[in-house]
Amino acid sequence: MGGRTTLLYSERFLDYNLGPSHPLRPIRVKLTHDLIQSKGLLSEDEIRITVPRVASEEEILLFHEKEYVRLVQKYSERGSGLLDAGDTPAFKGCFEATSLVVGASLEACDNIMQGKFTHAFNPSGGLHHAHPERASGFCIFNDPAISVNYLKTKYKIRRLVYIDIDAHHGDGVMYGYYGDPSLLDIDFHENGKYIFPGTGFPDEIGENEAKGLKLNIPLLPGTGDEAYLMAFHKLVPDIVRRFQPEMILVQCGADGHADDRLAHLRLTTNVYREVVSEMHSLAHELCEGRLLLFGGGGYTLANVPRVWTTAFAALSGKKLDNQIPEHWSRGFRELTGEDPPNVLQDKPTSDDSKTIGEVDSVLDELTSYLTN
Ligand SMILES: [Zn+2]
Ligand SMILES: [Zn+2]
Image (cartoon, rainbow, N blue to C red; front, side):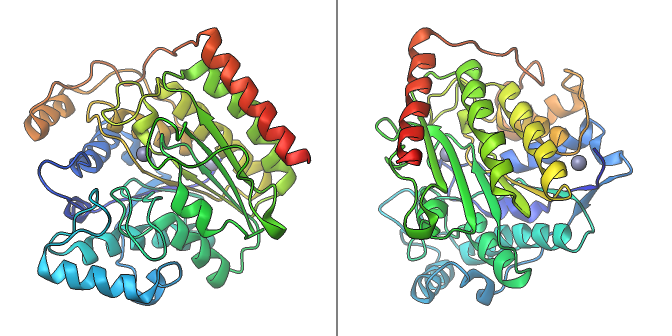
């Protein structure tokens, strides 16, 4: 599978900083860039960095309400205030910082649609919880949701697939397009009975013309690679082939990895490699390779760079050995004060009968809603 791949990157991504004690640590994006670089991926001929632009207000309004955008601007100047019930504090310059995250995703869309690159990854993006009128779950502006409308209006795309593998339900994107038949939205996440935002159940399948085009796969805490990949392979390739997308978007939150500080799944780098590789082949089979990867959650610093480097290698069709370069480990220690990981990719985790049985019954339940 050919194609050129770009990594959206600027050190200004570190400006998206919700505070020193906040669980979302912007340094994870730099650590990811540095690991991708130290694994030699950026010296490949067909892989390039793209420096992102800032999104315009008009572009942000493709998804968000004017009144909310004004509020973000006001709090951003002031440098204080809460943008939701408590998880998403405003900070000085937050409007500019989150506009850059959005701009990076839109630049990725442009690069792909104009044929400069086939695949793109915006590790600062994937802020899938923000709603049109409010921030939520660390997300100020929803860059995947804005990207969807951007692709529809600027490039007249009529059939998009959005897959969200973050440990949390991508509620902002799903409910933002709940009745929109141009978006097939498939969302794997830890069951909302156990975790924020408490939504995303199998009976939520979309409305009106979009009925059957919103799919939720809630997973028990403790779900590992085996059950996850079984569900993914049973469900995703067929339904994506039937939908015939013109482009594929993947929100690749790394918080489903085992030992995440906020979520309770037990996935390893194997899931991320397999999911991205499968979406990569489907993109080449169905839509000339057009594939855009967003970051997302991920709260354990020793995991996020490994997960996203693995995903980026799969996006660009490259194989990686398991070595963590020594100079990257040193940088990791200096930047985080924590111990660096020992290996790049983990051994797969297998599941017990309880999690496998639960995944099977969720798939059955989903099928029953889809066929009714
Ligand atoms: Zn490719
Ligand atoms: Zn998450």
